Length: 529
Image 1: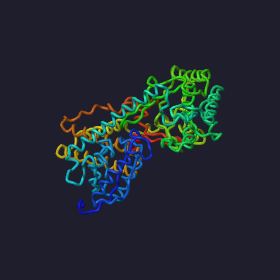
Image 2: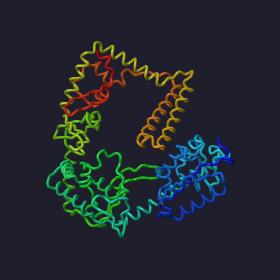
Image 3: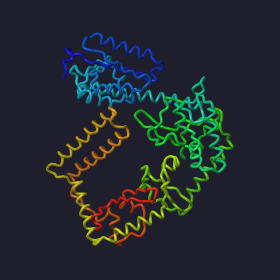
Image 4: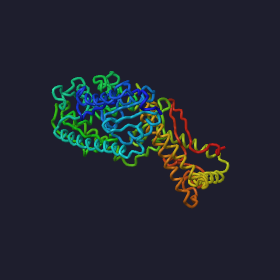
């Protein structure tokens, strides 16, 4: 560890201003923060200023801030070894993330952290883990953010109920009024495309055909159109082909009440540290007649009746066949799932990417459920007919299952508890390392969240194992969790497929355009000799 009095510290100053504090490019708040920090480092020769990191207009409840992320990257690359902020609230208002960074990562990297107005210096003997005021201050900062969030949300809701547009980006077909950012005006080009979509649907063209026609004419999708006309609009990484129109985009356009002049807001619900989620329609804030309409109300009502009739027809049809292969099928070319669609009483499957974007993205990979069922049944019967001794297979499976349950629930009592505690600790450390990799840009956000979810499941299982040490030995119910084995025991064959059979026996079915199928079974094929 460095001698804090005799060593030069390569110092970075971090300054943050949220939108609620002010919206000037170089506001007084930022100026004041800079003055406080520069006065502090000028009072001592041990600090050498390397860089300033400024996030203007970013909330402290999230670490997804450009300058903040650049600062963490410079820390991990050892370009700086000291961070100075005005106070803890400028650094981060999430007490968990702040604790992980300051109390763990910065200490492990020998990074000095100073909050001037909080009189906090990580290198002056007051270990953050032992300083009760440190986590309390972080929690208070987070509570302040939550309270501020509630007040802002209430203000937004009040303005929405007044009919003011409070969104970030107007829906396709509209622009912000340059003289009033809370008022919408028509975008003539995009409005023409909206009218074309409504006219085509009223003339009998299906939503998929409308999407294909727009793509054939090289008309930009709403997401791509917004992105090219507004540099601040970012396309979601989850969109596989954002430049293409999809059936879903057509459906949303046809159902959008904004096009008859009604302001529709409050479609999503969110909060501090919470992901946005769709609100029920009953909670939408709808104010009629706030802006000029693109579609007349009569045409809009006709379209809604047509859409509603299609939904009711599919929902009330009697004796519908069940789509038993949903979730099992994958496209052999693009890897996307195959989605079902119905024709009268028949079910077929096709590539979901093709269904959304048409032939520009993939081919249909069409296969009917009846044809697929015949192939799977034939293959299963062929496999099962080759089983020499079904009773032996049943007994083997019971023994394997019994051993699995016992091994999962009854660890070795002598070393079980210590071993499990050690495994839990390793899993928790791996989560912390994954978080560091995520902050360093080595892991994507979705990969980090998936990894944490898997770790949590593993930890839960380990906790259950630990609890099982104090329990009596489990009794294994005969064949209770092996329904397909029960069927074999009763009849020795399978004559009809259902989702339960598929779940027990099949892991995945890959469908290629030439109707070639690759079936991956769950059970061990070594028993089928």
